[in-house]
Structures are given as C-alpha cells and as structure tokens.
Image 1 (tube, rainbow, N blue to C red):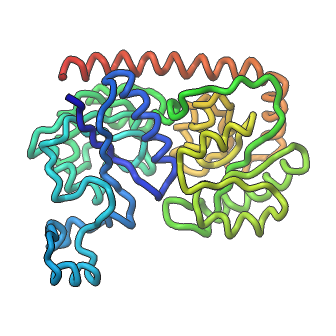
Image 2 (image 1 turned 120 degrees about the horizontal axis):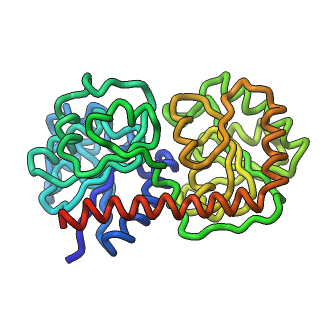
Length: 356
C-alpha cells in the first residue's frame, strides 16, 4: 500500500522551502519507493500565525449557502490543496519536518497537537535556526514531539548543539538533493547573481545594509565578469529592473523551474542560502553572502561564505580561484553530494524500514 507522507513546508511563498521539499522527496523515494506526498502549508497567506485561535477554523462547509457567504467575509479556514485542521491525521503514515528554521512556531501548533494525540511517526531532516533559541525553553509540545521522533538531523552547528541531548546528526540541508542530475563544468562562462532586496515581504527580504552591499558588489562584478541575475520572489522584479537596467533577469513562480534556471551558470553568488543549495545539487559551486545566522547552512553546500560588508576584492579573488580550478571543484562537489546522499539513505533505511 502507498504510504501517505505529510511534509511541513510552504507553497508559493519561499522557493527555498520548495527546493528543500524537492530534495527531501527525492531522498525518501530512494528509501521508501513511491508514496503520496501531502503538504502542511505554512504559507502565511494560507495558515496565519494565530489561526489556531480562530473558533471557526474547524467548520467544514458542505452545501451550506449561509456558511459559504459568511466564509467569503470572515475567511473561515482555507481552501488550498493542503492538509487542513479538519483533515484526518490517522491517514498519515509519517510527518516530515525538513530544512527550514520554521520547524516550531504558531503555524505548527495544531499539527504538533495532532501528532502527539494520534502518536504519528515523525522525522526531522536538516532542520536549522533562523534565530537563537534554547532547547530548555521550548514549549513542552515541541520537546515531547522531538523526543519521540525517530530521526533528527540538523543543518547547522547551533541547532545541533542545542538539540545535542536528543542525539541528532549534523548533516547538510536536503536541498542538496533537489536536482537529480548534475552539470559537468570544464570552463566558467557565466556567473549567476542571486538578487534580494529590503523592499519585499517579511522573511523574503534582507536588511537595507545587506541590500546596499549586494548592489555595490554586483555592480562591480558585472564590470569584471559575464553575469546574469536570478530573482526568487515576485516583489524583487520591481526593484531589480531599477537597480540593474539592461541585465538579463531570471524568475519563475514555479520552484521546479529553478533547476533549469541555475543550470545556465557555472558559479553562483548571493545571499539566498537555498539558491546556493540547489546550485550545489546541480554541481555548481557557490559563494554565499551571509547576512544572518542561517549562513552556517552554506557549509553543507561546500560554499565559500563572505559576510556582507567584506571587501568585494576578496570575492573577486575567490571567483578567480574558482575559474582557475572549476573542473576540480565541480567534480569534488558532485562526489560530495553522493557521499552525503549515501549517509542519508543509510540513516533513513535504518530508521524507517525498522518502523515500517
């Protein structure tokens, strides 16, 4: 029988979450074969942070015209194609929290309660931190679920150290497996610059200081190298054409398109961790411009990390180093991906097949 696996993720919000989901599904299929992927959508347009306080959230509308009219004004629940508060979690065989720093929080409280009430199997794969936290200060709800989980891997050292009593594994974010194919690179022809701005939605933007640095560095790089720009979020398009008129811009609403978008490049540079991650999955080396605590995740993608504010000349030196050694760097990255993949498969098989 095909298993039903529920993934905590976002859809049409942060492409990075969807790169993580692609990689997680790819790796789980190698262990479990085909299954039914179901999502618990944390997109704030779908599942608001304090929605669990809404007394009407569990109303199920079934041919009731009055309720339908009321719902059009009050927005009772949501209608997107994802797991709802009224869905029967007993039909779920496994819940997966993967990659994102948002493995706890208000949007997940309802799910955690359902997991514990129904004793649903859970795993945490490559979870990380967006902000500092203390395990001892987490809600009992989260701590109980973590303690019952059959596998925890973390993508950064901070999260690993905080969860150390739970015996986690320190392994790269599963976005490393988002692409099934790799690119062999013998020469650097084109460099991809990942754009971000402070003028976009919360959690999809960077600080104004980081943005100013990025704009300055990209202006310099465009003079030295053949570069094109990638945007992940719709709000960025209004800004990028003002900042870099005449430069070729890439964007898609569909996260799966980014595998083909990133394939156009031989080196990728930018502040989007999972832009660096999907590139690493393809075999393209990255230079991550760190702007918050999440930059540590870049180590799992073998990225070189520069914090915003550093002399741009250091980045140019690093690019030239990549250019002169690209064949070897590309080969090492592809081999590294397969070694990490073997570790993940071995771990997942030992945990999931035993509990099958």
